[in-house]
Image (cartoon, rainbow, N blue to C red):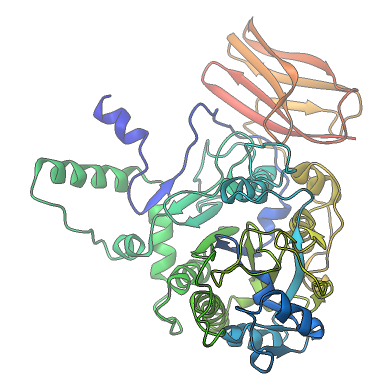
Length: 517
């Protein structure tokens, strides 16, 4: 492999746009501006490994059955933190800072979130959450990537630009989450770690060894800095913020500190993903002499203290009104603890939302625990996680029902997670792009779709894709003369929703969003 190709296809540097092999590029098409005009930001915290939801949100009203089911790890009742949202539940004692946000009306809880027929594999369960699939289907695109693709169907072709200079989404970590994968292309990029972020803005690098490999690494770093399209805008945003609130020396806090700095610095990125690992607590979850201490307690403190510092910093920086935070884990743990003072893979678990605009409510009811719990008994689902995604789209990003269904592929009940005043549900008009060479009409369409295009001659290709990136009509690929032309497609058999009409002519590509009634 030649050096140029190696550089082109390798993830390098602090800031790395993530690409998938054998995926096609998109070009500029008509877009709906609602998400672009909405300045709201979503920050997603993944609790990696399967958080024990029953020791996170404790059913005080069933304390006897709770203690009986997990006598070796149950929290002492008088140490459980009470919150104003409900006197039937309480929080782990290490979540005191999150409890304080709840008391201030800046947090809420959705109880027992999951999906039908849960999967207990870390990898598969994570994939289900990221792609919003059913447990028996495999999707290649992520829910957030599909959402971003609604407004940016051509990304990354033509990005960044003077109009859209910033990344659409950012993952703090070396690999971009599957959740940010669009129908054809990743909509996200990564900041590989916190050290590399500060090296970027300070023009510093980790020293390289004085060897041939070290010289090659130094060369690759230089090329990476030159070719990274977003590094300068990220650096400029970061340098606008000279002072932040103090954060605890915790792994999650260090990631959230970067997120707060970029938001306050004016970066228009819509979605951030951060990660806190270590939740696979099969053994040693607690210190048996004091169950409010141990591995899970440390994780809870990391979570609660980091969120509180982040929220305080956002307020200090003057951007708290624009940010909604959420936590999720790929699954919860079993109701009954095991003999190793731990818990095994389970099903549903609670989710937290936090921010200035949250609806400070307890959604659901305390987990039901019977007097006789079996070793394999799981917490039943109260809320489908895709209802949570639909709620974010509706109440935070102001999506309409068609967009929600196009991203999630079916209708889901929504939960009023944030104040109703955030979204006005006003449908905007798709702008005409003066340099467009493809027009789909009528749009919206019922049965017959016309594609008018300008060809340079030679090979012309037409595809109609759904939001999964799957062809719903066989590709048309043929030689044509140069000039303005038109083809007609019968789409009467397709379900209502949003589709992507894709035109390719030699090196030119363009994608137009089509609404099927």
